Amino acid sequence: MIVGKLKPLDEIAASIEGYKNVLIAGCGSCVTVCLSGGDREAMALARELSNPGHYREAPTSIRTAAFLRQCERDLVRAYLQVPADTDAILSLACGAGVQTLASVFDKLPIIPALNTSFLGALDEPGVWREKCLGCGDCVLADTAGICPIARCAKRLLNGPCGGSSKGKCEIGGDVDCAWQLIVDRLTDSDRLEDYEKVQPVKDWSQDRGGGPRSSHRVANAPLE
Image 1 (spheres, rainbow, N blue to C red):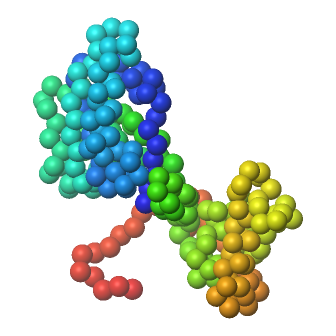
Image 2 (cartoon, one colour; image 1 turned 180 degrees about the horizontal axis):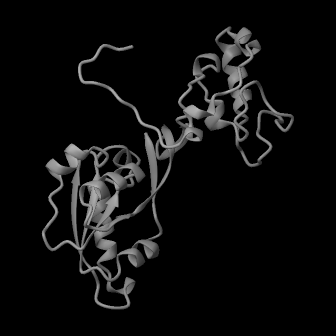
Image 3 (cartoon, rainbow, N blue to C red; image 1 turned 90 degrees about the horizontal axis):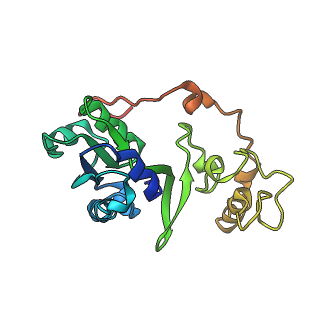
C-alpha cells in the first residue's frame, strides 16, 4: 500500500489560511489503512483546524467529505460533492490522489495534507515498513521475496557491500542488511544456489530514469 503521514499541523493551517471555506477530502483506500487519511482522520483534522489559534485572522470554515479512492477520476467525479462556495480542497490522499483531484477540479486550489512516504506493508500493529520502490523490473523471484532495491540503502543486486556487519547495514541503527535477510531466507528454503545467480545490469529506464510512467490496459483484453 501507499503509506502517507500527516504534515505538521502548523504547516497545514498556514497552507489554508486566507481561504474562507475549505473542504477536507478523505481517501478510503491506502491512507485509510495506514490511519492517516480516511473519514475519521478527516473529521479529526477538521476539529484541529477549527481552533482559531492557528490563524492570524478569522479562522477558516472547514467541512469534510470522504470516498473510496481519490486516484480515480471517475470516482472523484461521481462521489466527491464539492459545495459551490468552496475556496480550496485539502486532500488527505497520496500525491497521486492530490494530482487527480487537481485534474478534475482545475479551477480550485488542491492542497496536500499528507506527505507521501513509501510503498509498504503492515509488519505489526501500527508499524508500516517500506517494501517496494516500483522499479518496473521485479527481481523478487531470485531474492527470496525480499527487495534489494527498496531495502538495501545502495540498491545492490548481487550481494552485500563491505559495510554489512553482523546482519546490520552500515548506515547505522537497527537497519537490517537486506542481503543478510535474503541469504537467511534462501538458506531456510534450501535455495541458496539462487545466491550464485548474477543479476544483469538493471534497466533503470523502467524506473523513474525513463520519466513519468504509465500503464495501458484495454478492458477485457487477454493477458499478454
